[in-house]
Image (cartoon, rainbow, N blue to C red; front, side):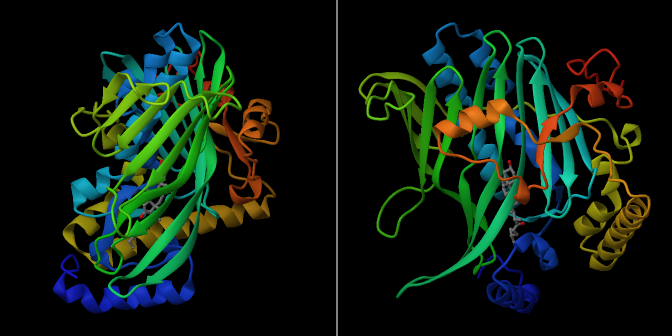
Amino acid sequence: GAAVPPQARGSWSSFLKSIASFNGDLSSMTAPPFILSTTSLVEFSSYWAEHPSVFVAPAAEKDPAKRALLVLKWFLSTLKQQYASRSEKLGSEKKPLNPFLGELFLGKWEDAAGTTQLVSEQVSHHPPVTAYCIWNGNAGVRLQGYNAQKASFSRTINVKVSSLAQRLQQIGHAIYHIDEYDEDYLITLPSLHIEGLITGSPYVELNRTSYIQSSSGFTAKIDYSGKGWVSGKKNTFSATLFPDGREKEPLYTVDGQWTDEFTIKEGKGKKVVDQFSPKNTKTTPLSVASLEQQDELESRRAWKKVAAAITKGDTDTAGYEKSIIENRQRELRKKEKEEGREWSRRFFSRTDKFPMFQKLAGKIGEQVNDSLTNGVWIFDAEKASEARPPFQKDGASVLRAQE
Ligand code: 0T9
């Protein structure tokens, strides 16, 4: 494989052997240094709003069906950032840093859409679960969600192709809320698999189906497919938006590639009404506080030394610095256990009731599976308002960045 550095070939093939026989989770395996990323998984929540004006657009639409369409358009517009941006930037998917419990990633986007704010917190370490809330106060929209991944391995041996892929089911969900219409959209997450493992240049492909269910009576169904054996383009999807229960009568159809461009058509697909090009649309950079101004639990500050060592290719120092973080975490857990308490999450709370979720999930046959995510997590505005700076006392909608 061309992507594996010559000196790493041995370690890559033993890594592959270990994961294939272990049949388990890549995130828990020790991977060779060349495939390590300096970014923690807690940062991935920011992919939901890298086009802030697309994120807030639904709030300005008066027609309920068109509003649901704009929510679908925004969701589709996030896929390239979510699933292909690292491969594009780094040449392949890399193994993210595994966040510690309580790790935070805070930031904001400032652009034509005003200020859009992000709070992401690692709410569980075993299993790893990230919760997030993203909101824009001017527009009155808020996205909150939490997620974990469940892994399994598949091996396909074909006459020409021998492949090893990791399949990941995403557990958890997101809810997009619009204040003006008091409307909620339940977003389920696509399954994915990681290909390119044999050649050492892993990348993500999406598969199966995901949904967006609105409280206003619309369902969006998105079917994903990749480059098939014979034909088909990579990163392909086909989506329909229909009134609940009337799948055969779509109001809109969206087709294309989530990395390239897609077209929105009316009804079963005649008249083009809109299009979007993830490929040609610039993202707004997220601003985060400088390292000195960050809280100790903020990701980039906490992982600073590990990241610097990875960048230098200094595996020993990276391992040493990582063990300092891990030992500290072990001590904290031990102390909590002795004192009979739990780590208190800064922005999220565990809940056993989430009526809106239950209501919308029922319509698309989804279930809450809290056993895989160590609970169901919701943004806790009260906690957020009590949190230390940069969170101000005057309510959760006011998150000011430090000057
Ligand atoms: C939520 C997203 C998720 C996180 C990542 C599977 C994966 C960790 C989870 C699902 C985001 O909203 C969307 C995008 C990409 C997903 C990651 C891709 C990936 O490879 C990792 C896993 C855990 C690995 O690190 C595999 C290691 C492999 C690249 C080489 C050994």
